[in-house]
Image (cartoon, rainbow, N blue to C red):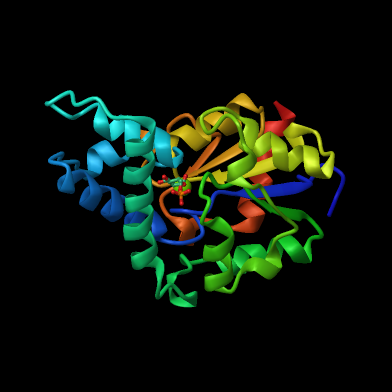
Length: 227
Ligand code: G6P
Ligand code: MG
């Protein structure tokens, strides 16, 4: 690690480390159709990175019948979605780690840079354990303790504050527009993984995780710092 290297890498989970963003989508789609609402992948883009109840509220806004639901009913629907999701992630294993991720984690560690997880998912720890990646992480942000979800920067600043590292010495990796916005609001270096049409606000965008190269990220980070 050299002086102007970043000190912490903060990873999003779903859609960055593993392909579980697809499972969140399928679980929401199933729940939605059970209550007569149809959602598609385009709509799903705005659910990425967004917490469980907030996601449910966005889906219910599509409900033509305008049915009013009590807090208990909302809780029950969110729990049902989570049951659909947990069924899908039951058999998750190392085969579900996205390309290039484990190599990147190893390289970050080899350079003595801290690694944190900044996910909105309350299932995050279990997923990391199932993938066999938990040992790479120095700190996991607990989504249940974050009061303001993405696009608010709190998820990411919680990780930086834990290490007592200035925000501009943090690199965040995200597949969601809400996550990129959160990183940018925290004034961290934002790496977007996916379609530039959704992630254009990121400081650096790669098409997919196989394009995440440690040296290249450091180079882009240093250019960003120099401006
Ligand atoms: C991540 C995913 C979202 C998901 C949220 C909450 O941010 O991108 O799709 O809704 O976590 O996940 P949870 O597992 O707590 O329902
Ligand atoms: Mg994500």
